[in-house]
Image (cartoon, rainbow, N blue to C red; front, side, top):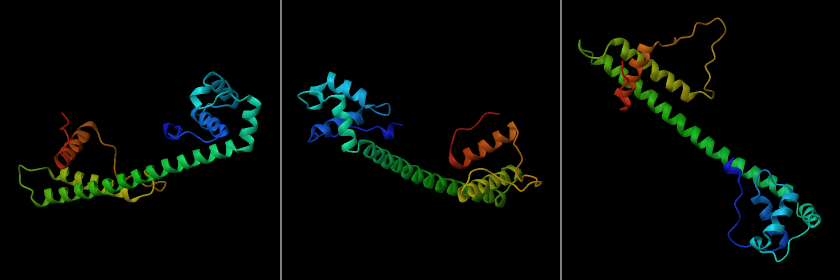
Length: 182
């Protein structure tokens, strides 16, 4: 959880309590007041203190300054930021799926319209259209899990290895990826 790791401020905290709280946050998820007392005792000068506070003082500061509430608030805000970033990524991902799905469908239709004897097989063009429709449907749904009413036969069957190679080559033709060997 690197996103939830607190990093000390650049400017020096004003009071000893704030200096201790900054050190407490820097200890990370496994922090404890006893560990803080040990760190401050061993590294007093690193935190701008002339002498280390006792464990009893640290405990009193923690209660009086509401360290646990402040810590919970900082962690909540960090989680909210991570959630916002994830939702933005998800929205962008769905937009790309929608674009690629529609492009595959367009390419499949164009292949069918311009069909000559030596061109793409009709089944390959139809597969491109089907794959595009699946991507578009995936982009437009809230979940990524396919659910079919009980007893209904799934519309798309599992592809064998040869069909996957054909599909991969179709994707390569459309998006310019590397060709998959046979």
